[in-house]
Every structure is written in C-alpha cells, then in structure tokens.
Image: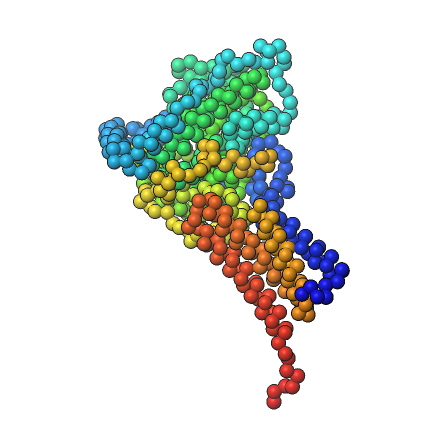
Length: 464
Length: 97
C-alpha cells in the first residue's frame, strides 16, 4: 500500500485524515449545536429553531365565554363539594391506614427512608405571600431613582435574575382586560376575593387582595422537577420531587419579589400554593409550552417535568409569544398518559373539546378535560399525589441521545409522522403498565448518582 | 475524549480506504463515496444514540437505537461494497448465442 506513495498522494491523504478527524465529532455531537444557529437573543425563553412562535396558542380559547375562575371550585380545594364530606373522611382514613401499613412493610417507595425524604423535601422554605417582603431596601430607601429601561431590557434582566435564582424558563404576558386578565382567579384558594382596581398600591386584608390596574405584567416561570425521580411514581419517593419543587419555588418567589422591590416595582405573588391565577394558562400564553392531554403544561425543554408559577408586577416587560412545537397535535395521537392513568381520569378523546366534565374545569377553552375527582380519589388510595401521567409522557425524557432532537423537530414540523413516532417509541422504551406500577424500581433510585435536585440545569441554555 | 478517538479512527479509515483503492487500482465513482459516507454517519449515530440512551438510564431502548441506526449503515455499506465488487467482475465480450 505504501510502495508507490508519492509526496502529492501523501499530502492528499494527510488532508483526508484531517477532514476525518474534525468531521467525525462535528457530524454527531455538533449537530446538537445547530439549533443555536438561528436562535435570536430575545428576552424570555431562547428556543431551538423547530419551536415556532405563534400569535395564538395551539389551544383554542373563547375569551368571551371565559370568566375569572373561582379556585375554590378546583378539585384540589373544592374536593368535598364534588364527592361529599363523608367520602373525603372515608378516603382520608384509607390514606392514613394505607400509609401506615406500607411504612411498616417497608414497601418500595413508601419505606421510612422515602417518607423521611418527603418530609425533608417539604421543609426549609421562606414565607409565601401576595405582597412580598416588607423590609426590602427599595431604591427610595437607598436614595436612588428606581430602575428604568426598555421593556426588552427589563425582560432580559428579569430572565437573567430568575435563572440565577432557580427558574428553568421564564416568560412574560401583558394583561388585557378582555383576555389574559381573566386568567387571574376571582377567589384565591384561601377564600379571599381577588380584586383588580384603579388604585396606586396593592393591598390585602382578611377578605380580599387588591391588584392595582397599573400592574399590567405577569412573569410566568417554570421550575424543574426530577424526571428520573418522578419515574418512580406513583409512590411517595416519586411524588416528593413535586414537593421539593414547590418548596424551591417559595424561595424563588420570595427572592423574585425582593429583586423587583429592590428595583422599585411591586411584586404580587402567590399567597399560597397555586394561588393568584391559572398557572398553566399563563405559561401557555407566554410560550413556555403548550397545553396537553394531561391538562398541564408540556414544555419543549423538559416536557411536563416542571411546575409552573406566576407573579404580577408593574415593571413594563416585553411579552413573549405562545409557541407551537407540535405538542398539542402529538397529544391527539399519543394518548399514553390517558391509557396508563391508573384512575382513568384523563380523556381518551382524539380531539380536544369545549365540553367540560365538571365544575373543576374552567370553561372557555378547548382541552382534553379530565375527571379530576377520579384523579384525586386515587391520590388518597395510594397515599400520595400520583404523577404517573407526567412520568409516562414521551416529552418527559433526557436529551443526551441525538434521536430526541430529531424526533422533536419531526413532531414540530411534520405531524403526519406522529402516530409512527409514538409506535416507534413504544417499541424502543416499552409500554408502561396501566395498573399503577412504577415505571422504574423505587429502590434503584437510592443507588443513582444524580445531579443536584435530580435535574439537568444546562438544558435549553447556551452559556454553560 | 471518545470523540477525539473516533475522529482519529475515521481519519485513519478514510486514509486507509483511499490508499487501498489506489493500490488495487479501484476507481470509486462519486455515489459510491456518498454511500460510504452515509454509512459512516449512521455508524456514528448508532454509537451516539446507543451510549447516550444507556447514559439516560434507559437500557431497554439502547438495542433499538443500535438497530435503528446500525441497519441503514449496514445497508449503505453493503450497497457500496456490492457496487465496487460488481465493477471488478470480468465482462464477457462474446454474446451468448
């Protein structure tokens, strides 16, 4: 082979060798960087090219029909209203007896170490309040004017601050009386009326919370849950990542309120868990993700493995638009969450509908409405919040294998392949059980070497 | 580090293949080179998706990745090999009566 190698041929071969050395990594690993090529430096969430910004969300909304929702009607707060107090008492007894039994048995996911982790996940957070901390050093106290800048500048610095404080993705909405303002609750979970009034300052007493009309901007954000942990659903071990995320958010909200107040602006947060307004709705309108069959937000970056929160401010912000990443469309063909749901609460309809299934649903949008009472009843029976639908969602996965990027791009761009992609996924990953069995063995979780909080904080960000 | 080694292997492979074709006086046409390149890309994809799926703690899906990306690689490589081999076969100048 080397007998007749000339200088010319040697140099040509050297060139080919160099091409091979450089192209091999580029051909594979650098493909994942191609998504950054046309990424604009816009405020809020930066996205791969296959996530399209749209003017209207992929979920149809009839704003004229929609009214501000009374959160006391949700299945979380108003469960007794739908099933009766006697049934709630009975279910509570079942829950307590079941948990005690499984704790004594050391059932995987319910043993002492799992229960201990749940207790830990729910502790160690700051106070949660509507008005925010009262002792913040405002610009006035510091003897300087309040921060000013363009709405784009404001969105950029709020996004940077929130990522630093622990949020995954951040979006912004400008409230409109006829549309997005209707996503603010009429009554908070604790029974206080949410008033929107032409006043200069927010206020709160034992009957109401007052949002000034001039507070026209909503900051909506996601906080990641641990996908690997929630795949141990439905157990206490799987569910405590939900608890931990809510606990983390109490600190994130408190710090965001401190940040905004330090800039000289009001920061009206959730007074209690899931208060103030419809979190997934705000997130959909701000483009953090799309509505889905499981009636929660599904994001392009983390699938449903996020909790969603919101805060109202008078700091002018540049709104972020809804997105179309093919998620809602894929839900029509997939149905995995509904097929596997142990309580059969989720809709098996192929198309979303305007028809609600009970007072726990908010009319005025087209969705895969669920029977939330079945879902919540099951929570009592297993002693903890379930989360199986989150765990089995095809969008709830890690992003190391390049095939995920190809698949998501196909889902976003060529919906005709959705059925085939779903079938291939079932072939590759297996079909989850529909009997409430955890996808992954809870005992194996304790042997893993997961990152902090069990989450990948680099996904979806460029400067890491 | 993995990818540096893979790059070196591919670089060596490309050099070895061109040197071998030259020494055996094989002239590959452009589409045969394209088939070989596509086969190499699919091998790389099979490797990346297989190892990454294991890293994602989804071992049950790893063999599927190997087959899904390895099979096209095999098909392209065999096709290129067959086309090259066929060109080497002697052609009979005397038509059969």
